[in-house]
Amino acid sequence: MAGMNTTATESTSPTPKSAHTRQRILDAAAEVLSRKGYAGTRLADVAAVARVQAPAIYYYFSSRDELVEEVMWVGANRVRLHLEEVLAALPAHTSQMDRLMVAVDAHLRFELQLSHYATASIRNAGHVPEQIRIRPAAEEALYSRLWRDLFVAAQQAGEVRPDLDINVFRLLLLGALNWVVEWWNPRTRSLDELVATAQSMVRNGAGVR
Amino acid sequence: MAGMNTTATESTSPTPKSAHTRQRILDAAAEVLSRKGYAGTRLADVAAVARVQAPAIYYYFSSRDELVEEVMWVGANRVRLHLEEVLAALPAHTSQMDRLMVAVDAHLRFELQLSHYATASIRNAGHVPEQIRIRPAAEEALYSRLWRDLFVAAQQAGEVRPDLDINVFRLLLLGALNWVVEWWNPRTRSLDELVATAQSMVRNGAGVR
DNA sequence: CATCAAATCTAATCTAGGTTAGAATGGCAG
DNA sequence: CTGCCATTCTAACCTAGATTAGATTTGATG
Figure (spheres, protein in one colour):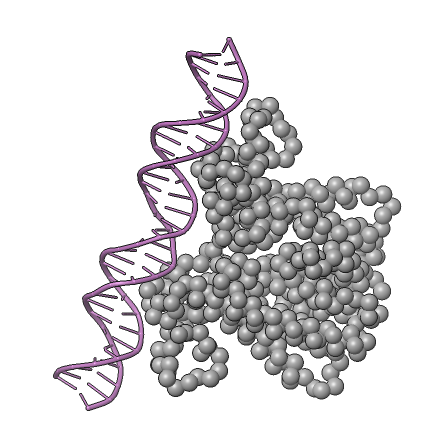
C-alpha cells in the first residue's frame, strides 16, 4: 500500500495536502533513527519530533518496521541518485581517478551534511530485522555497483595499480567512509580536511606511483 | 558486585568451580550480540546458547545491560591487550611502518577469527544506551591511543608523509577495519588477501613515496 | 450552514521479554 | 546419612511501548 511515493512521480491521487504530514513523520524517523539507532528509536520520540501523536503514524505506515524500512530505503536511494547526478555532471574527459575523488567527496558530504536518511541507513543496515533488510539492501547493491564500476574503469584505464584487489579495496574504503558517522564531529574537525584525507587515502593507496 | 574478574587476578574467593557457567553465559552473550546486535539480542537466546535457563543469568549479572556492558568491555580490553602483546614481541629494530603492518594484521585477525567479543564490541559501540557506554568507551580510548602512538612514531621517523593528517587517517583506517565485520564472509574471501590489501592501503596511502 | 471524509486525537489493549519469587537440585562437609 | 549453601529451575509478574478502537476535529463542498 504505502512505499513508493517519496521521490518523484507525485501522482495526483495520494492526497496532495497533508501528505506533508507523512513527510514530517518520515523526516522525524530519519532524524531519530540516525541519532538513536534502531534499538533506541521509540515511536513516541518520532511522533514528538514530527509534532504529532504516536497513533497518527499508523495513518501513514502500517507498522514501526515499515516506517524504518522506508527510511532506510530512501536513505540508500538518495545517496545513489546524488552520486549518479554528480558523476553525470562531470566533463566527459574527466580522468577516472578524478571521478573517484569526486565520488569520495560526494559520499562524505552527503552523508554528513545533507541527509539524516543516509546516516540512518548506514548506521542501521546491520541492525534491523532480516525481514526489512531486503528492500533497502537492493538499493545498496546498486550503490555498490556504482563504485565497483568506478574502480574497474580506473584500473582498466591504468590509473589504479593493476595488482590491487579492487573489490576488497572498495569495501575497505566504503567502510572507512561509512564509519565516519560514528566519530565525526563538525565542531571538532573541518569537513574539507576530512574529504582531503580520504581522497589522499584513495589516490595514494590505490593509484599508480 | 560483578564486573572485574574476567581477565587476570583470579582471586580465591569468587567460587572457582562454576564461575565456569558465568563464562559460558558471557561467551554466549558475545556470540549472540556479535550476530544479532544489541536490539536483536534476547536473554532467552543467550541462555539457550549457554545451555541454561534465562533467569540463571541473573545469578551472575544484575541486568541485561550489565551483561552487555561486560561483553563490550571485555571485547575492547582483549583487542587492546592482544595488540600490545603482539607489538611487544617484535624485535626492537622493527621499522615503524612494519609495526603498523603488524597492527593491521593483528586487528583484523583478532576481530574476525579470535573473538566474538571484539565483533560484539565493534558492532554495538554506537547502539547501546549512553549509560553502559562509559566503561567500554574508556577501554576503546586506550586502544585508540595505541594506534595514535604508532602513527605519531611512524610520522616522526619519516616513514609517513609529513603533510598527512594522521588523526583523520587513523580514524578512517580503523573505520575501514571495523566495518569489515559488516561484510566479511570467510567462505567468499581469503583472510590473507584482506589483510594484504588493508596493509597496502596503509603503506601506500600513508607511507612516503 | 450541513455534511462528509480525511486526519488526528485520547483512551484502551496486548504482548514480548526482562525481571523477581520461591521451589528444587546437587554436591560436599561433618 | 544429613544438613547446608551454592546453583539452577519453574512459574509468575510487570512494564514499556507497539498497536487498535472509536471519538473528535477540521476543512472542503454543495
